[in-house]
Amino acid sequence: MRAMKGGKPESVTVQKKLIRGERASAAGGSVSFEVRDKPASLKTDDWGRVVAVFVLGKEWQFKDWPFKDHVEIFNKVIGFYVRFEDDSVEAAKVVKQWNVKIISISKNKRHQDRTAALEVWERLEEFMRAHA
Image 1: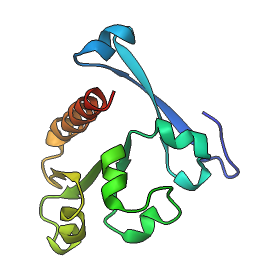
Image 2: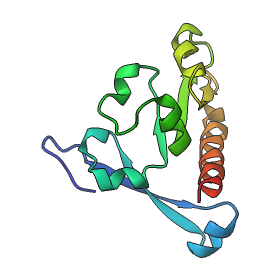
Image 3: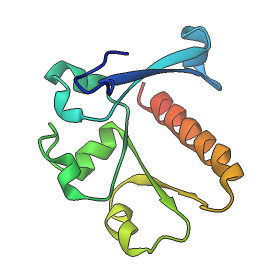
Image 4: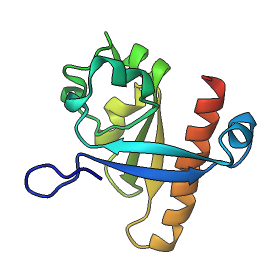
């Protein structure tokens, strides 16, 4: 990890064992994901490596992205919106218009977080296979 001023890393690398498919065999069973918090720091060449985005449900999140609209964004990358299951649906109204996967988690049943995390990984892997 490379640290920025203030000690927060610019990126974190996550090594993930693939579940199935040709990529699992080709990659020796695993793949590395570079996780970033600030897409503004991406260079033009970096955008081709972006495979997923966690959305906040706000239009400003996509300001200065190199895509013309949400349709283009979510055809090129998979989007996830993580919400608490008892949050108001108002927050998710905008997101429902986008091609993103809504993942609901419980504030009180945190043992179910693993299931939500597995859903994210499975959908990401499925998306990557479909767009290989």
